[in-house]
Length: 82
Image (cartoon, rainbow, N blue to C red):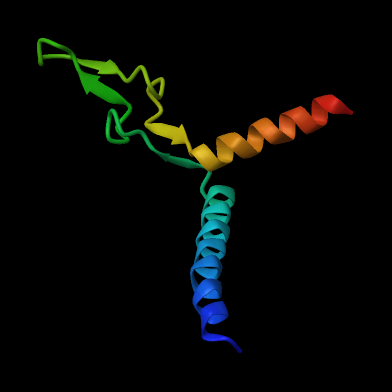
């Protein structure tokens, strides 16, 4: 084999492997911890005395991963197209 072909296959194979691992992670763990509240579901009020529910995650502490959101959107469009 040509060394240039081998050098081109390496990064392509690594990119495919990373993509497949991320897709598997989105399938197994569709949610991640909310970055705004740190997964607690609550944040301190501006005065610093009381707690309020996180507006970004609605107090659950979890957010849908970007890859899973894209998958859900594509599935919904495919289902509505039938």
